[in-house]
Length: 277
Image: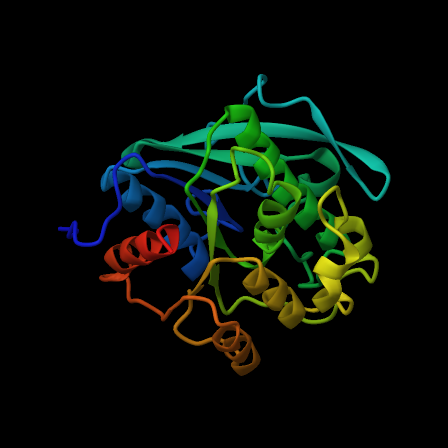
């Protein structure tokens, strides 16, 4: 039984943006919480929307994905090139929740998620992250759905806080949205493409907002996500020491790791404190 202590008003809307969600991808710490938490928050009376990338190793027929024509059809310009945005959706019947998928043939029609079959990072992960973050927010705009809180899970979602706080700061749908970010022990080695920070630039986002990722490695990406979030969550019981240091020094409201038995109530109370701060 989930306590109602500290839960916010039922009209609140929560947007979940995740790097991976089971059953569409294998079970991991990140994919499991991204599956269970939205359902639990919805069951407390909140309205939710949930997004993830449509990686090529997700079986569309088995999981009954279908394209949402009214949301698809937009082009996102990244590195001076147009990239068509395709939106798909599937339902998790047992949870009575839908999951929206951000798709694009060039970025996501490969049989792996963020590394190739040899475990090597895809060279265009920087552009894939940009496309995903902007694709989620543009789709939410098309839905005309204004989230009170956005909860990001995993480094692949690291640009969402920046775009909400800078690129969409004057959009009425996001003007009052708060962002919390869950960090997991799932980092990557080596830098992203050296021109990453230039590719991120859009109206409202300038080079000064990106100074911490002039060297675009994992720890600097953590710093970027932390800088533009309103609250930070330790998603894994153990995080790299440098990541913990970045999070603790950020000065942002911080929620320590919570066990599966407790995280729904603790997250709900944390959401409430961030929204009302």
